[in-house]
Image (cartoon, rainbow, N blue to C red):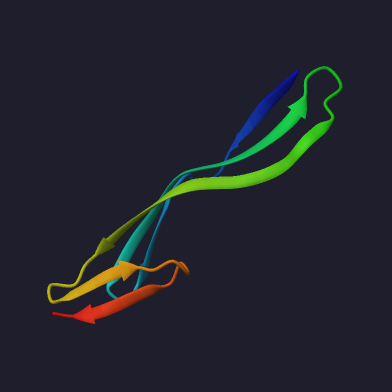
Length: 75
């Protein structure tokens, strides 16, 4: 049987700012999958979280493109 082991990260969230974008990374945790009983690691530890982005500009738009980069547009 496989079980997930989750470990907390300190701090569990952080705020980041880059130009006109403000972001918050929340729910940070490390999870690994192990075989119950033998404690054999099935899947190595992974850091996961949720990224929330906000456009703080009053006169610019922002959009995410397929490459994961950010494009800025003037209104």
